[in-house]
Image (cartoon, rainbow, N blue to C red; front, side, top):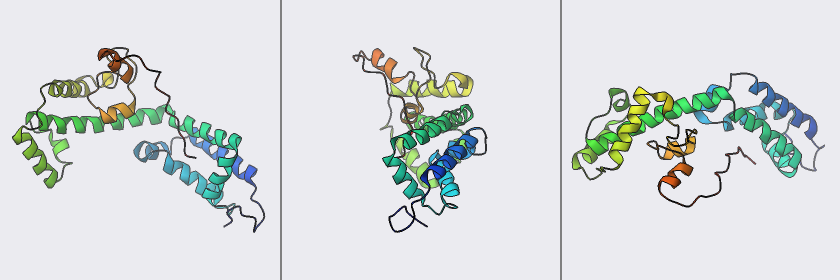
Length: 215
């Protein structure tokens, strides 16, 4: 397989590039890839596309990546396609649902440590015996108790169980809280900008839009 070196004829980069763009466009019009992307991210999906197109052309995916890294126009076209995939409404919905489930799991575990109340069976069943023992010790010792954090965790659990549609929405501006923030702070009540306002922190520049970049 050629790597685009001077030792052999140069690959037909334009044709390969157009095939990759067409494949990414076709993916965006289908749903077969969404479950994979929602579970493990868009990277494996993109890698599979590279293998499907570059393999028959006898070009390594890495050689293609190196080529478009040097070509601003080609790189921009690929990044635009990947961004569209990431913005696919069905993928966004699945990612948020998966994040809600993970957040609920984290919140119940944290609630156990903070309050001593054992989490629901579906949460407890996912924890191995060693972790259970560590959690029991932490809960029984009371060293992790936090009277300020506990009610916030309880409120977040209530949202997830009773009104799941509003979990992940900022209580102040009603915007969707970034998934990255909820992954770090699953009990977050508001977006980062509104949290700064609550804390009296001076306004900062708007949070940059998360872009998909691989090269």
